[in-house]
Image (cartoon, rainbow, N blue to C red; front, side):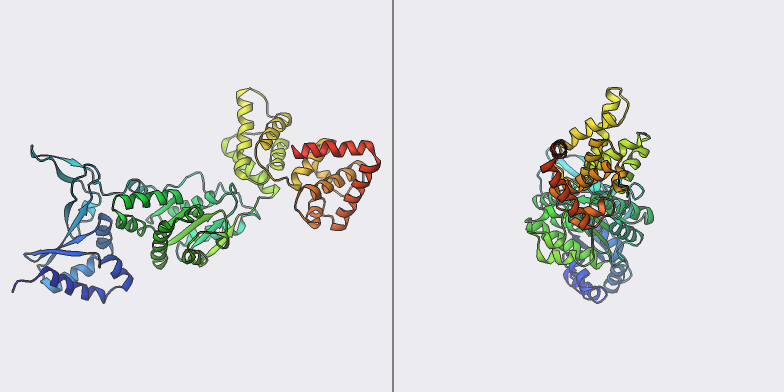
Amino acid sequence: MKKNCKAVWENCLNIIKDNISHQSFKTWFEPIKPIKLDNDVLTIQVPSQFFYEWLEEHFITLLKKTIKKELGNHGRLEYSIIMENTYNNTAPYTIKLPASNIKSTSNPSVTMPIDLNKGSSKEIPNPFIIPGLKKIKVNSQLNENYSFENFIEGDCNRLARSAGFAVASNPGKTAFNPLLIYSNVGLGKTHLAHAIGLEVKTNFPEKIVLYVTSEQFTNQYIDAVRNNSHNDFVHFYQMIDTLIVDDIQFLTKKEKTQEIYFHIFNHLHQNNKQLIITSDKPPVEMEGMNTRLLSRFKWGLSADLQVPDLETRIAIVEKKLYKDGVEIPKDVIEYLAYSITTNIRELEGALISILAQSSLNKKAINLDLAKRMIDKFVKNTSREISIDYIQKVVCDYFGLQLETIHSKTRKREIVQARQLAMYFSKKMTKASLATIGLHCGNKDHATVLHACRTVNNLIETDKQFRNYVEELDKKISL
């Protein structure tokens, strides 16, 4: 009696279902359609090349045993893959691939008719790949410059860096999955994300690592929907071992994109693949994000990058100079680190401006050049006035070394400068009295209050001192 392909495949599915998880069966076997059975060769239709490769890599042994059980020792399996032709708007076409031929067909060329009247044909590349995905498959899109070696560690980022290093040493197997890194702009989120990806590739060369921005992810998904390649898009991302999505907050209010990312996230997490996400805010502050997705973000670790302290900023500048093989005076480095406090990207931008000015105009880099360039740079960028910056301006005004403000000396001119720094810090920042005192020589809040009262009294009784305060106010506010 001649066997029916649908009945044979149904019997195969009953066996397969008992040997794999329900989710795997639903994802990888339910979409398959039996096409024909000819001379003990069962042909099945799969949705895509990725689909075929996944079956061959993960289920070929089970498929072979099942086919032989149903069709005997001579039973064989062939795949029929539907290809969407995005070049000439012709109907879909298929390619046939025998089972266990994956190495020779990982990126096959396809012969298809071009001019039916002439009967001619030419070989064209496989048009199946979604635009942009073919490159991503072989290129992780990681920036080699953003390594752990070039990432300066400080109190501001120690937790996030340590978690990132742990993840890179054992991706998908730590409690930090997903790892969500968040901070304001310019504090090193992207650098750290790249560093983790690079370290994973170094430790596990066989793993597929992919860095993608949320904008790229969204555009690829839109293209997939437009080209009717939704399954191909999902199958591609389900093959990633370490997926890094940068600036996830840009998925807010994009419900369909969030939904597809949610399913990809679930699949990867269930299969112990590593997920790394960056954002400009913690999950609790992400408005317009799917509740189910936010709950997934909280499964692992959320680590923030804070504004770097003075020592870390100086170390960042010195590292940049060392890498570029450039030397500049120590006082210029310190002035730069004191002036730009809230954004590492702006800090590096100001340094580049100084180096460019020096090179183009053949001028030596000194404090005068740095002051002109940095003051202009700071003036043209939105910045938050910091205690460090106020101290720098006050010391420059009176011609004092910054260290003197932090010293215990009771010299009149130094005490006065310290009191002015405390006065302007209370007036122009949101810092508490205790924080201001800590930055001004480890004084207590009572000392800060006394300094502010003293300055206010002198403004009312001492004309020259009042002029000092007015000029300093203008300099700090510039």
